[in-house]
Amino acid sequence: MSTSLQNSIENSKIIQPCDESSLNNTQQCYTRTRKPCILRVFSKLCSCFFVQHKASSEEITLLQPHSIEGKKTLILDLDETLVHSSLHPIEKCDLKLSIIIDGNLVDIYVLIRPGVEDFLINVGKVFEVVIFTASLKAYADPVIDFIDKHQVVKGRLFRNDCIISNGSYVKNLSLLGRDLKKVIIVDNSPISYSMHPYNALAITSWFDDKNDIKLQEVHKILEILDQVDDVTEVLKRLGTENLELSPKNINLIMDSYIYERSELNSPKPGNAKKFEFFKAADDNN
Image 1 (cartoon, rainbow, N blue to C red):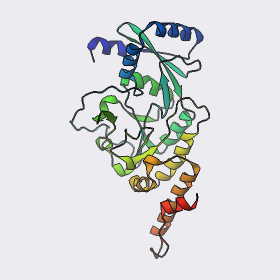
Image 2: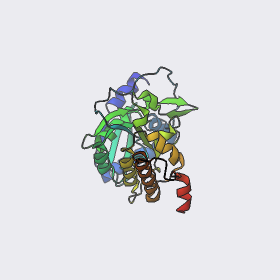
Image 3: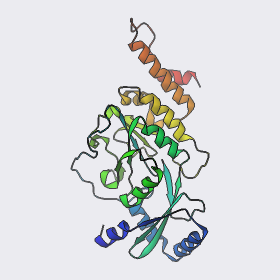
Image 4: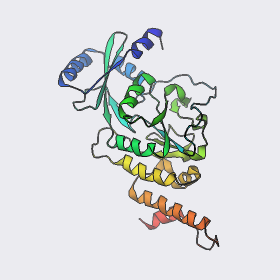
């Protein structure tokens, strides 16, 4: 990225909330500007569009030493997991970013997924919360500032913290400096957590559904995972990459965990028939 481009991005500002006059002005500006140019600009900022960069093979520790002893680490994706961003004007957007790049005004309209504020408050009570996005810091930082009103996010990781694998941005959780048995990532893109599928809770991509309740469902699962010693064992059996979050699957997780815990504490372990997770799932169909 050139110095002039970097300086212009760093001088970006937030305008909120969206108003009708700004929408009209932006629409006129957008129609006069070549769409391919605008898309190239947006791809530099937001992970919604992909731009290939050279990967670094140097391994570093991405997070500072754990400051919250005993808490598991919860990694949250940003785009299409907590928010949705668009170049096209949105009348009732929650946040509008106005960024000047090479003398051109680029407006990004951001919608916040329903329940984000409560979700962050709740998970912040029991987890070390880190947002890890494939977007650039210049775009993601003000968005995180906006949604994290109660300052529960303890770490922020961006595109430069990702690695490139087969032309895609991948989040290498091994570089976090955390015990992977105690790390959970919530992400809408299986590619992002392809190196650590058994640390992942898949969540459906969100764009604008005001009735969406997926964050509530994820929170219920996280409450259970917080009680286990090794989250990878539970998520491996669950088959996270193909999981559709639902109350049924949440109950299956509960049943599996409660059984194993009672069996472990039983004075005569091994007497009960071992819980077969996927068989139980079939029986409930």
